[in-house]
Image (cartoon, rainbow, N blue to C red; front, side):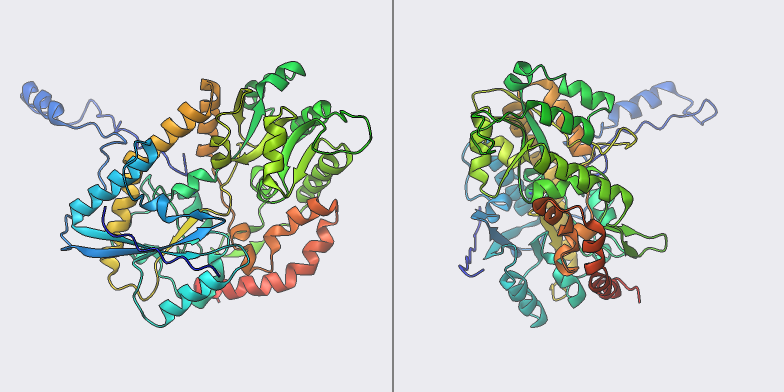
Length: 495
């Protein structure tokens, strides 16, 4: 593989998401014209090639870029170097790593390009990555052909008008299955798409949220079949709370709930709770009929969700929460939590756990809710094109090619090898993974929370504080968030 630039600065990862390509099943009516010679029809049929995931064409022009360098700005976040998720340095015999390496080699050879990756430190609450990116773009440096940004913070730059509309980039086809259609739908406003993601972002997959459950504890406590609950549509917030409370035990009987006791559920105090907003169809911001956006967090349903979760986490003591991730891992590995709400990168790290576990989607709010929904932790990559990009055709062709090849060769390795074969320990869990993937959902209000007065994080704050006062919390931030939303909408052409 060709050169890798790493500038690490200490200061600063379906139906609608990733759907499989369907075969052409268009029927020919009896009245259609047919060749006079039946053998001709047979010959033509034999020459047709069945379109599969592995050979689906990207319809890109064949171009020779004479060794031009394609430079991606990426990041290091929480000790994870995201450049490795785009370009590993060498083959190492591990399926996903080698699929990434071979994808890059294939695109390099096909278009005669060289890949370079610039990495800078980007963490939640640290503005340096955004500032350095903005300064480079405003200076017209033309330093980057593509930017893979931290989903939780990149929205802060939309009002600066420094990104191009992906719908204006040549050779980008957002209807293709390698682009996350649900993310595109959620993040498109007034026909403009500044933020997109797809199969080129392995971080989108790494960060998918799910529940896992300890099969030994489920058997010990006589818990009903969890998979059947999902299939029947009965896996709901109330059912989850019922099971969780029934399993929780103050083991030492001292009245103090610690990590030495037994719990029905273990979660962190942050994004695993945020995900309930998506799971229960409780949007922070909604799309309006005229193509705009409006604040939508305050509702009777939202108030009910907050009350029920506070009862679970604080009154029944059914759920263990901790700001130290290793503590949650410890009690789950020690068979002291029936369920664990976490993301796939964490789940893969549990493959050596002694007790067997299964995978479930997040529960629905109630049985009337149509689908099980989940999302990706806000640490995944969103792609943007800077306004100072030197050649939009170059960016479009190479980005589309990389995303398409990821769909064809990388994601099958990740999904089938890492998730289904190594992580999930039964075919039923693989079925649950399909449900999670096919219903991956996004909320522009939550992803843009940092640029909307933190409105997307009111919910998790209420659960942390054991407060049911959603209405007043929303009222306190509604006006400033509304003004910021109006400002952001101007960048989408809505005055």
